[in-house]
Image (cartoon, rainbow, N blue to C red; front, side, top):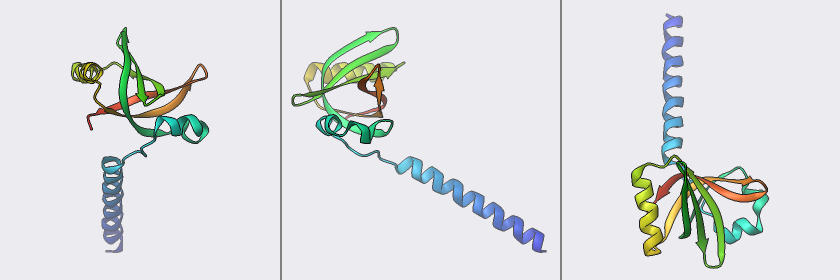
Length: 125
């Protein structure tokens, strides 16, 4: 009898932990950071997932990699998107042509000592 109760409690705890993990993943929103804030406090954000927005100044595609220069006012941040799908490319091109703001979620990192954003997700504000 006690063994059966233990199994029920254990299974219930596993299910509860799984639901919490799914909820945290689904509702997690990385902090919004401005490009000027990144320039001032680079060490604070290195290696972290962040949300950033701005306009696309430059865009270039090379071998399934898209290189983007995202700007806010006078501050710019090189960004990279690996293996984009057609919808992502169309969204980037549209925002580049129209100069509309776009939002990226990605990891802020250094590549050859230059700060950049590795884009995970593209959102239209």
